[in-house]
Image (cartoon, rainbow, N blue to C red; front, top):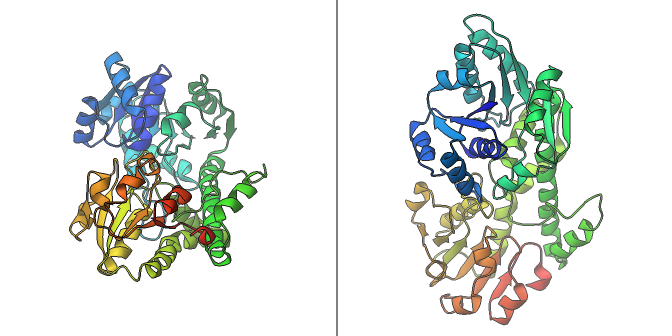
Length: 433
């Protein structure tokens, strides 16, 4: 059985390599010829642990290939997975221009029955719209089915999530088509839930929204804990023992980011608005996340007598460790705030690269951690890479001008840092500062 993956970004490449690992013949299709060439040469276009080894393995075995020849690829494969981007529009809605363009391409190119699978995160009723777009583009009627199969991959652990999923959601109006897609995952030990396309689409948005709600709940709680001299980390641990709540996604920080939560919450809020329904809890989730970084930056700013003229080190650019993704990364909001306060900013990240727009603003990225903190009045940890957890803070102490650590992820050893002479401040743990 041959599978075509349309779109070779983060989700597309991960999906393609996992299916190759499961024993299928896989083709990755992308209009970007440079990306196709890079992948064909065995080079990933993004950072994700474990995927490089799979790419090397399956290119060598001939189980995966990449192409920009759409018509031929569509005709040669019986199952087509759509993994193209659905970025946020200006009003928060999901932009479906790439989905529609692919639908028209499929309709114009297909010459026999296909199962088209939507892996991209899309608004409710996109399955129906895609079906109509394909049918309208066909020169003459050819049968096909459209199935919704949303992804639940966490950046930084995508391979683990894909090979050991919590669940597989399949939405289809045709039970046979749904069962056909279910059979692709039969080697994985995971429950499979067959439902309607609209339900599958909603499950994706609802899942991300609920996880974001837990994060924003912990973040807002951290603001109160800061005032009451309570450690929000201890509060989260105590709550997490309740199996109805659980410990996951209750960790306070300077906000969530990435390609999923911010975009999906805005999209769901837009959908609700169009239906004249207010999701007030989700509105507050978004509001807390938008203001979390600035709230604590203002607290930290008072601790060092203002950021103006100070040299500040940013530790971690990516929105989370083990990825180079900067989409909606809290670090960017932190950098913008610091530069607006006329601070000198130095940046370090093991993988992610500083955007050119910020380089022109006078922000410098340094390759080595000791160079990034050299002469700094404070360091702000924005992403919990192990390189910061395990850093030799005793040796780094000599590099600082002033020993201020602002831990935006509550992951550093405050007791050890305090013993070394640092002034430590975290998120919602003023009692320990």
